Amino acid sequence: MLIIYWGFSLFSARAKAVKPGTYIEVSLPSDISESPYMYVQDWEIQRQTDFFSVLDAIEYAATDKKVAGLILDMDSLSLPAQQIGELRVSVEKFKESGKKVYAAGDGADASSYRAALLADKIVMTPSQAASFSIPGYYASYPYYKTFFDKAGIKCSVLSTGEYKTYGETYERDAMSEGMRQQVSTLLESRYASLVEDIASSRNIEKERVVQMIDSGELSFISPVEAREKGLIDETMHYERFLRTLSKKDGEKPPLRDISEYAALPNVSKSKASGKDSIAIIFAEGSIYMDDVNPSIIRKESVITPDVICGQLESATDDEDIKGIVIRVNSPGGSALASEIIYDAIGRAREKKPVYVSMGPVAASGGYYISCQADRIFAGRETLTGSIGVVSVIPTFEGIYEKLGVNVERLQRGKYSGTLDLSKGLSADEEALLQKSIENVYAEFKQRVSSGRNMDMEKLEGYAQGRVWTGDKAVEIGLADEVGNLGDAIEAMAKKTGLGSSDVTLVESGKKSMTMARVLRDNIARAQLEHLQIAGPIEDILIECQKLLEIREEPLMLMPYELD
Image (cartoon, rainbow, N blue to C red; front, side, top):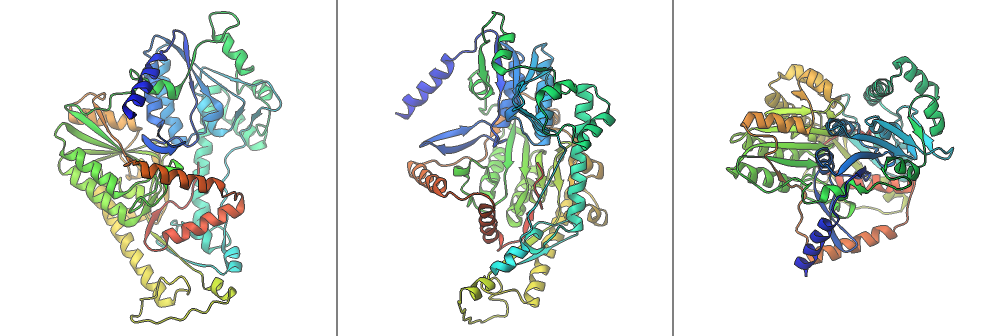
């Protein structure tokens, strides 16, 4: 039955052939993954449309005689800054064909507008209800200490360095100076890139762009006002706009969604192994020792030694694979899992060259697994570095007291009860745990020093948990070159004497999807969907769950999210 179903699906895909004059609508889901990934939905195993399949499809469309142009859907292009840069490369290649690129939508924010600036023409809905808003960049982080004090929860946050601020939101009432300095610097960097993009694409003086954003002149205005200011080209309802693209008056041109187009057999790149190939391994998501995260339900990728090390070993043992490119998009996670993956990359390097391409974020544990590579490519707006270690130890003695629960303890061994949730840490216990993470931090720096050929004194100035943008990381020696995945592949092709098209994809996140698992995951999904909790209560419950998950090991994690 499965064979019949797959055969029918393949036949259906081929039956929907691309018609002459077709426009490809580039509409991306907000949770688009970089790696091909399977998940369960509506009792079926689905394959997530991945970001790089979309980029490949855009570049293929440039050579497809039946494709007339691209339409970027502004309402679905809120991508991380680094991915906008990679989208730019593919769109520019498409433009070289002479075909037009349009952007259209009902709304625009800083992210989607930066993507829209790649188009030859920007069209938005002519309504006061439609929104164009470029107010700048903003970040907010809730601090839980006062709430935790009232609830009877105490968090001991042990960290290394002024800038390793992960966990401070549990221990403090207000932002530390290190956190404030880092986030402010990164927001300024994002702001400068936005101003540069608008000024160059719309032919407006930078000073005028800065004045409009800072004064609020571009905040929550209508597309009509945006057009008057020269920020977009035309206001028109989407259906009417489509009819202007057709050669037949009053008719719409043929349209295909980018996900459908990317899935067509002749569009999707062959992933079969062949002689003299380059392997691509995707390391995306938080780093765990085991896949305890219900990612198959949430449609989220995770990184585990079991998967990544297996892929590295497979690629290393395959004589047809001449080099390995690892795409890292991770804020970090487990220190031990990061070390195991680091060692596996080292073993692979003994036999073959290994390059790393950094995605939107490759920080802390994400940087740990990257620093072993022969060559590191970082996007200009990649967030990387964050070389440091943190442990967050929650205790709930206050809750026990409030509930009238008396905990009796029996102990043999001075530190046998250190991680008991029902009591706080003693000064000796805290000192012992601090010494432990300092040792992990020293090991982290040693790994970076060896991988980047950098002396420890110099490295310390770039460590202490500090986050760097990709261009700065190249400048200080934490990465080798500003570039994207395509640049890394091209460099590996030159290194191994191959063509950049000779690429084998080694898929990450592959699951053994038995019927029992499909059943289990759908039941779990149904349970989650019936839990109708939202707003700050949901946020607090998520934070409490996170505290329980991270309390038993040193962590290498980014201290904040930015995009």
